[in-house]
Image (cartoon, rainbow, N blue to C red; front, side):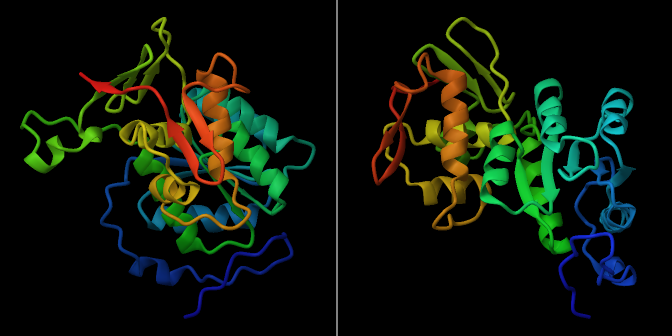
Length: 276
């Protein structure tokens, strides 16, 4: 059966039948993972809930922002799929509240395909931005990617293999210019010891920059390392994430000393990095 992308309006009849979902590989251990779907269109939330439940997720369907905020207090999900076009509500404001007050994966799923909306969504701190119409399989892959980045590093009493020991990211703590960056605990401490909260995208980007400190990294390389895809000619995802990191880390984000731009080449983390 051919699967067509999911449509954009409540008048659309969705083309993915339910029965074939049973043939998907559900071997991933996602049975305890809670996902909230917030969309004012019940047919979309029902479709996504059925599909994701068949993948092994626990799904809560919501249709209004206050319901999501109540859920965050009573039964917080690991990830939220958020539609921006909620009647009488500001989807960006809801996203901002989530990012400011909760540690949760955030994927915006919306009919707003304008580049400005995408940039604003990423600026707010969304981990990904998917436009309607979308393919269910692609959305599921993006959800898995975000959850994988959110997952804490596994603890093990056994020493790491030699290949892992040679990798900078296999070590837990990095220091540079007074900053402390713990990749296992997913924590960034400023020179005064204050924790700086990072979104998933910001954490992933900083991890790559730290690992390759002193090297100029292209936008294509950074996007492939953090998102698993190539940059399009007008893709500003990395620029947006760098801007957010600078505002959190630089004394003057307009005159950065930590993460510098190299015109026509990319970005570089300038300070020397040491490992504990």
